[in-house]
Image (cartoon, rainbow, N blue to C red; front, side, top):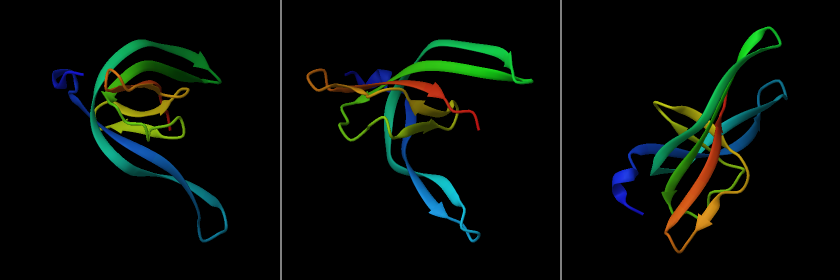
Length: 107
């Protein structure tokens, strides 16, 4: 994997559920690693649904081989936003890369 393509900084985050003062569960995301990776947009769309615009953005992110990343994580970039990992990452050990298929998280 060539370093020139790894031009975006990505935070790998894991989900943590904690209770607030009222006994309600609150989901937080903690950064467990920060890596360099590429960004390859695949498709995107906007549609009107339930009285609001719903955006869908699907992309591919490539990073150096990282067997600890799973579909339970999500990734975040300051310029591009937050993305959930769709399915298990492709771990290409021989090529030295991990490939993630992601979709934008709208909060």
